Length: 219
Image (tube, rainbow, N blue to C red; front, side, top):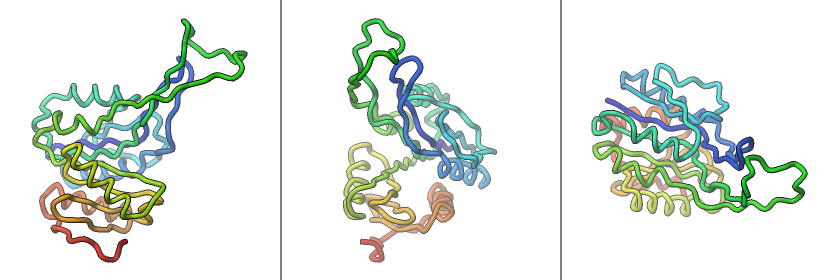
């Protein structure tokens, strides 16, 4: 099967020498890409240029991206997108980009004193995935720090409904240890760690993952 994995952080430029990004390392997505490739699939891993992990994704093919718009353009430029069987959108993309009154400047002067920068919403790549890959199983991610596991599950359900994806992977402090796998048609299940998540992913793309009832061991 031809599979796409996105991982690591995007960045958004402030000026021509500075940028904002996030703490994503790309480790989990790199391991996922490597596991799927080792299982015999043809995997292309789109990895953020700022990813710091030493976890390698080979034998998956690696494509480096920079900003949200750059990733979207690279995905759209893929030949044979209708042949993609699964997409794991694990990249931690920027929610905001920077706007500031440039007045012709290419760099904010260090002598400028206090500078006001405005955060404006960035593009949502996940909202384009169904159109780009109409025949693929698509898994999105929901990483949350605040709230309860039930809150995260509600956001996961909304992500699936709004973006016509199939599954949402939940993690972060609000979810707790491990990962939650949420699917609108069969509730959610819990997997203990990244290794278990990779095992689930291999089963899921081959249609062997068991339909999951709501895991009563999780809130």
